[in-house]
Image (cartoon, rainbow, N blue to C red; front, side, top):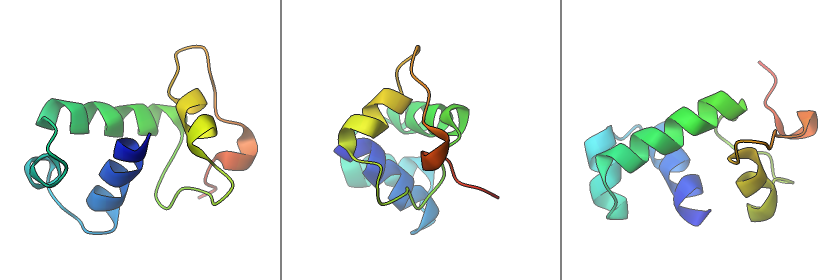
Amino acid sequence: MRKIRDVLRYRHSAGLSLDATARALNISKGVVAKYIRLAVAAGLSWPLPDELDDSGLEHCFTPAGRCPRSHLRRT
């Protein structure tokens, strides 16, 4: 889950492109796009809530799992 956190942080805090994020994390551009798409589908945004640990984050990314409302960002 560390890579997912890093992808979201690089894209939103640093404003890096998909290519730059992929290069910085040594992963493919497709994986970066997938993680961002999954985060949007799960209702997550950056910064992630402090109480969302790796286990909770992983649960948000499973097909059957949904993030608890307390972990979703209110806009």
